[in-house]
Length: 236
Image (cartoon, rainbow, N blue to C red; front, side, top):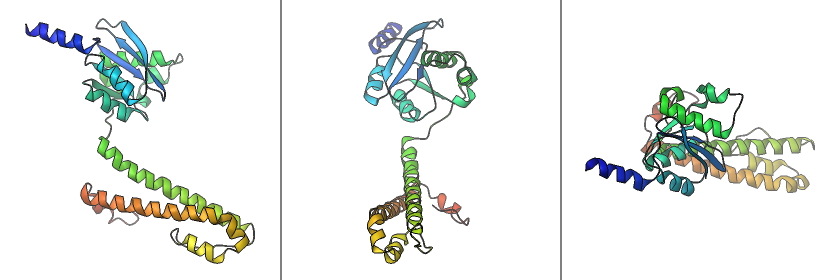
């Protein structure tokens, strides 16, 4: 009786496969499902979007799913796990049967992933993604870094522009650059670079916002990071 109940449950959930391999791309991901005897049971494509992927994953009975690490693998692996599947995220640098293959195709790669998951998952050199919360915290740091790099590029642009006209903005901190530049650049040239100076000013405020966010993260979730700041040159 118990066996029959379990069988009905699987059938209600959808197709039953031994494993599924996913070759992920930005728009559509190819998937190949294998049966217990190792033959290809089904294949298809699913939009690489959360709603479509969830609907597809819920149409399949819980099974082992394999995909390679990449830009989409963190959110996809979490979503597939929530749908009841056992997800393996493979390290693409250590799967020579895929990366060094002379006959690459999305379908072949998806099938290879499915076969490796079914046969021996250790061959996928599984990696563990950060939690969703930790990944969000890391994006705060990366966003700050992007803002700092953008500001540095714009400051270099202004310095090069005024230098071509025989003018120089004295050396100063990035935070003080806009004030210094406005004080020394001649008015006709200042009118040209003023929009850039405003952008630099906005970026400085953005960086300050991220600095405060990082301070809060360290104080509330990563207190051990404060020990590392005792090393000269290491910030929060």
